[in-house]
Amino acid sequence: MNHYCTYFDRRYALSGLALWLSLRRQDPAAVLWVLALDDETAVALCELGEPDLRVVPLADLEQADPGLAAARGDRTWVEYVFTLSPCWPRVLLTRQPEIEVLTYVDADMAFFASPAPLFAELGANDVLIVEHRFPEFLRPLESRGRFNVGVLCFRNSSGGRACLDDWRRQCLEWCHDRVEPDRYADQKYLDAWPAKVARLVVCRHPGVNLAPWNWMNHTYAFPDNAVKVDGAPLVIFHFARFRPIGPVRADSGQLEYGVMPLRLRSRIYGRYWQLLAEAGGRLKAVAPALGSPASVARGRRAVWKTRILEIIFGSTWWRMGDWWVSGGFGLGRHSGRALVWWRRWLASRGSNRP
Image (tube, rainbow, N blue to C red; front, side, top):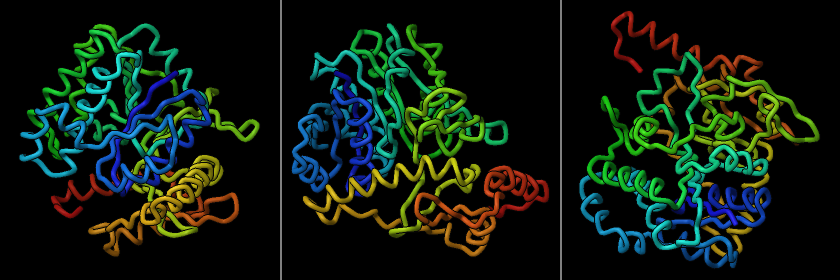
């Protein structure tokens, strides 16, 4: 039995349940521990009656980890949620000694194949982490961390628990949504782990934590309706920034990186859309307010310059049968490079415009 954990509130309940549906299909013996960040989410998930979807209210974690009380007072809600990243698996490994390995996954992810390659790479090690694997033109984003918190494995061993203890101490002391030389939120602390954690492995499987910021590094094949990444199965995709706007439209969240070509995005995001639809139907039966995508305030992204870029590069998608069409006419894959070039040009002219 493989144990996984995640956390989310009502805004991500749809994504979180889609994660569970995908995991249950690819790892039928899986247990997913969900830290529910609000009462509405906790009640709805319990109403689903899934015995292997185990729900823990945030208040329980706060009671189990008194250090969180002080941290909550000096940071925003988002920063406090970041602070939970080490505290949640740490408490689980303490409370549930039967867990041999605990895998943390972000709520906006989905499994496309068996996670067995992930555990094969972990082997007898205590900790597994995954690099962002940025292409060269996105390498400046490593100021926020070389590694991504989206997928992490911790063995319930002295080494695994010590890593979590140290990460928790750091996050309780400082976990803010701003970049500093050696820290950013909960994530940049991971940069030091390869030198600090003796039995740590950096995952090399190209199909683990494939994401909008690294898909352009790989080649793809589509045998038997599956997706192969450099010849290996796509295991976990990170749907960061993807936001449904309506029944047939979505913001891909890929403008800053590079918009996927038609066939690839249709295979990956098409399957995710089906998971979201199934999750929505399940949630509407127990909590109608959670069964639809939460509205996303666009803020500064709504200015006309950004809208023009979205049109040029096709970062807004429309669902047409089995396809996600964009109107970008193939230019989308260059959006990230174009924005990097544009910002460098502005900087060379001394402009402080975004």
